Structures are given as structure tokens and as C-alpha cells.
Amino acid sequence: MKNLLTDVPGLKVGNSDDKRVATGVTAIVFDEPAVASISILGGAPGVRDTAMLEPEMTVGAVDAILLSGGSAFGLDAAGGAMAALREKGRGFQVRSVRVPIVPQAILFDLLNGGDKEWGRNSPYPELGHQAVMRASLDFKLGTVGAGYGATTATLKGGLGSASRMTASGYTVGAIVAVNAVGTATLGDGPHFWAAPFEQNEEFGGLGWPNPFPVDALKARLKGGPSENTVIALIATDAILTKAECKRLALSAHDGMARAIRPAHTPMDGDVVFAASTGHKPLANGVIDLTELCMAASDTLARAIARGVYEAEALPFGDAQAAWKDRYARH
Image (tube, rainbow, N blue to C red; front, side, top):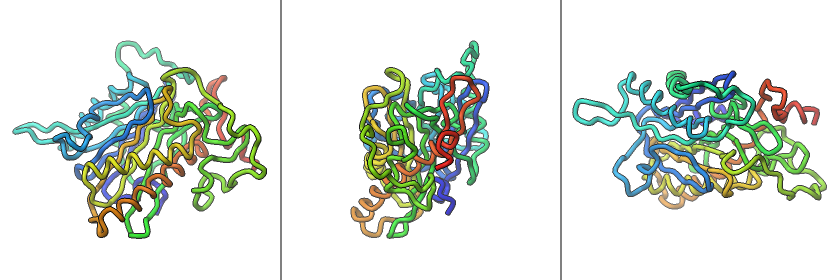
């Protein structure tokens, strides 16, 4: 396993970014339409075509899911992604036409130093198209795709991913663009809130500090309302219904709350998608689903820390420092 979302069979990931604008798009493209749902716990979300992911809605599966920078402007990325998927013959069949199903979530990266004066046409449709076309099993982490322009209250944010196998043999993977109103690290030090869940020193192997910093619980917040949002997707090869995907997404938010302080505030739009690529039936019903929910939470926490750990600073004078630039000596 590569410790990436693509360890889950049946999907690929593509990234595209614009260095001048300091933004980007990440596309999760499913080999076959995948059952999916969503949970939104942040107070200021930005989403497209997500109401259909609720369990009571008619649409049964999606072709891709997008994570994007650009705030509301970034929602244009779905148009480019749909065009790319249509070129590939993908989409929901309605008589003689196909309509690709591409739900999306966006984050706010408009104040990170990049040139946002793009005129009438934003870069997002082209970025969405490129992201789908570049989808593969291997992809980079950190300052790439939807995480390119992401920041946290104290450090550069980025794109993170992680995976694990459950005891029952199901694969669970996470991908996340970390653009938090709060912090992924404790106080002013290098230690990650997600340290108890780390595997194989994937984000430095530092554990938690000893002694615990006296100011670790002090609020460290970035910017103002709507300048944030952590957007993520959990995927598994287990065969799940939309309602079970909904439960998986809800449980994954626990991992977000463990890895970022604070999470789910009025000032961010924290979103988690969950998707099933449908390769293995649940052998033990709700018991297996419970194990998947635990794995989703732990895996998302790890992915968040990796997104910050792997990030590189943007090339602007007032850009936030990257974790490795500030703490690599540890």
C-alpha cells in the first residue's frame, strides 16, 4: 500500500494547479459510478450538486468528486470536470445524452498572495478539466491541487492523504485539503494533534510533547468568517448504501476534530464526502460498518497531519511558513 487514497481499488486522483493564482483543483475519479454521500458540519460551506447525495434522493452514484480552491469562483471547476468526463463517455444516461455526476466542495484561498485578477473567465473550468484528465494511481501531497493555496492559522496547509486496512480486510482511504481556521499543531511547536494515530512516522514521528505545552489549548485562529474550510473524502472498497456512506462521512468528522483545533466552527465550511467503490460486501453488517467508521476517523486525522507536514511555502513575501521549513531540525 502507498498510504494514499488510491490504495482503495476503483478510483484515481488527479491534481492541477495554477502557481500564479496560487490555487488548484483535485479530482477523485471513479472507475465505475460510485455510491456516495456527504456530511457538512462547518458553518460556512461551499458546495455544488451535493443535495442529491442525501440517502433519500434518487441519484444512486457519482462519476467523480471535486475538491477545489477559489471559494465560490472555484465551483466553476465542475463544468470543466464534466466536460472531461463526457469526453471519456462517462455520465448518467438520459436517452441519447450522458450527464456526468460531479459533486464538489470548495475552500477559501483568495487572500494567500496569488494573483486573483483573472478577469471575466476564472481558471477553474480548465483546472477541473486538467485534474480529471490527469487522474492516476500516484499523486503528490502538500502544495498541490486543492491544497495548493491552502493555509492554517499558523502554517501552510496542503493536500493530505492516508490509507489503512481494517481487521476485516476492507481498505479505507482519505484525501483532504487542509485550509483550517485553526491549527494542526500544538501551540508554537512541531507536534501534531493527530500524533496518537500516526503510522510509520508519516508526519515526523514526534509524538506528543512532554511536558504538554501550557498554552496548547490557547485559541489560534486565522482570518475572519468564511476564510477557511477543510474539505475531504473518505473512500472504501466495502459495498455500502448511501445511508451507510452518510454514516461513514459523519464518523470521519471525528478525525477532523482530533487533528485540527478548532473544527466545525461558524467560521469554516468543513465537509466530508464518503464513497464506496463496491468491491467487497459487508460480511458482518453493522459490526463491519462500525469498524469502517473507526478507520475513517483515524485515517482522516492522519491525512490532515500529512497535508500540513508535506506542504511547501508559497513563493510570496508574506506567505506562511511550511512545517518542514520551521521544524525540520526536530
